[in-house]
Image (cartoon, rainbow, N blue to C red):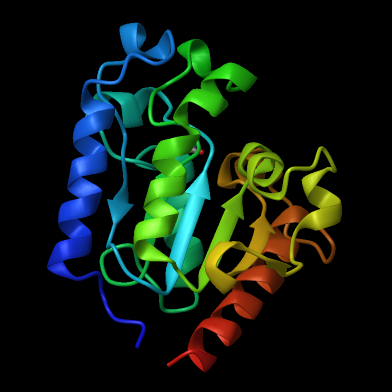
Length: 200
Ligand code: URA
């Protein structure tokens, strides 16, 4: 039931990626090196939505390949998940904002149709909203992530969405003490794995 994407779905994703490759809907089209459309494996079970490409992602055309990405891989690995076989990864923006500044409202709006198409094609059962920008876009709220993380919300196509801390935030907060961001992330990834496993 929660199989990998079909050839037809992969073809549809490729078509959307093709549109992104020539997209000039916002000024980031002029400054990007590469679009960063997705990473991991297209599947119907688990999607992670991050913020926007950073320097290394822009260079490589792949999401979460810098330090934050390495930590993200470790977090998934701690519960036996990996981007090679379990997770489809994308961002709210497909192009890098200069100097890694926050995405502007008009950039998010211009790019939204591509993210919506990715969600519509895959209709994943679980969507992880990684960091403030993804949370604010998908939950349409300005509430802080500290209040929202670790809770399940109803998402599109009957999915369950959970806000989680962004790995860059965890890199800036090194403590593992009870109640620290890293400790909370550990609680969240275990809850995610619990629900993920029930879906088999
Ligand atoms: N941070 C994100 O939110 N996305 C990436 O792809 C890389 C860093």
